[in-house]
Image 1 (cartoon, rainbow, N blue to C red):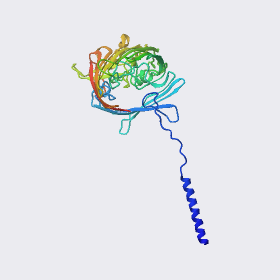
Image 2 (image 1 turned 30 degrees about the vertical axis):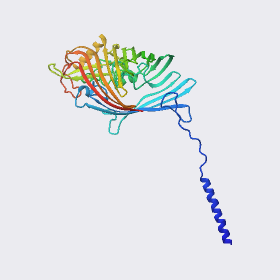
Image 3 (image 1 turned 135 degrees about the vertical axis):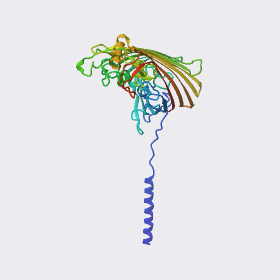
Image 4 (image 1 turned 60 degrees about the horizontal axis):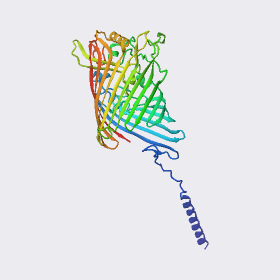
Length: 495
């Protein structure tokens, strides 16, 4: 009996222990799940960040493209370097793959919407920086905060139009106006007056775009330099940068009207021109600082009788001592050196030069400012919801003036010899077309072709010069107008 009683008590204890263990394994009451909610205040794609009143939108695109007969990038015409010389070192086809990521946040406050915007790209380009099998490039296009009408950070210049350098083209090398599509550091204020009328004023960093991204933008024509540096498009005084550091930011203003019929915009900018020294040594002295300026007028027309969604985009720009507001672009366009055939007796090849600088000076002299003007535009037509075509073009003119032109020509003749005549003034004409196919929403295939013609003003031949790039030493060159064709194919998926 004692044995039976002990067995029963042991079994009961086991059941109690097992029941307690099972009770301990039961889950506690879970907290309510915070679901991501759609934020409809700022358009499609925004969601509330859980636990906050801030809305966020993630976006971007993935792009793959190839350019033909290009220079440095997949849509840059062959107007300098190996491509300008058309030698065997040129990559006849340049490929690019790019992933773009954008982060847009907005929060409603008593002062209005607080917005932050970030746009970064990961890029691999044939012949580009770190273009190895596993390499690539990281770029920050935009990074800014907007609050109570102010913009702080890297954003499109207040001088630029909404289309920047692409009124209808897919690239960033249609000249004739401003292009800051990868952002300029700035402090800006925009006032909204209603009915689509706004005005902006900003202080903008001139270094990235307005000083040619480190390329010489003020020339000392007495600075030396071999024939190779003058004829290769790198400019005189190789190894010596005659641009001083920035002192005063560019001062920019804009007035704009956005309405159902389209857009009208006028912009103006003041730009300080500063040279470093007459030579590389600071005790050589320097020319006095000067001010340049630029003005722009732009027009966009919508609701055209040619079809729904068709547009015409036009802009015209004039600059005095602020050339980069006219010859601009993400490709750091500064100097052109294009080579071609020749029929001149004793000449090896022909060459066309185009140097876009704010001004030139000689030793112990003042800066002589250049003037520039340009017009560009595009007609954009939709054949149907899946197919569209744009026809675009531009014309750009650079004038060194009498004194500046003489200084430049004297320096060029000192380097290359010869009895050629003329001035460094030049014009650039461009025309092209692109057709796009969008088989499904946000997936577009594009094919573009563009013609560029350089009209330079020198005539005659150089003396016997040193080697230019892969060209042989001890040859002569005929000064002659040049032209080139550029093609590009792109596929892009937006999200």
